[in-house]
Length: 211
Image (cartoon, rainbow, N blue to C red; front, side):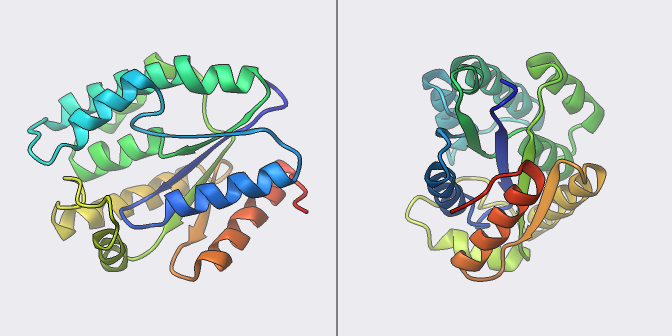
């Protein structure tokens, strides 16, 4: 896996991750790389079924149950999709990963963060992303954008503003603790400008030469 890379996209609701991951995948492919895009929770048949359970608007999972379900989905995703794709020589781009669990369930919902980090090590060992792109924008703007999406309105979007403020502060705290892995991207501008910043971060940190 030495020549392949695992890049994750993180951010609160409405940050534009889905759009930006598609644009980066296309740019990387133009540079001659093989790319697989995926998402969490999900990314494998079993993990997608768990995603449906987790995102149901009438679900009543408590935060620890959520964390365990997310970890089960992540393990299957790694074993079924991410690791095989990297072994085959692909770069893998993932829409959300373990930082989301730490931000949402840890900072947002109060699950003990040390336990979440230990749970991650059980699931993934010492495997971590080569680069995480954290798309940051004010909570109000993100929720406004999320409300206009065709497939919006999952139960996380419906949580109160205080939850989303804790979520954003959690992401920023995670970024401060991992400056070598996480690139903070201002997601308040136009799509093209955000993609330019993302490609610059990938070029600077991973040595990619974009056409």
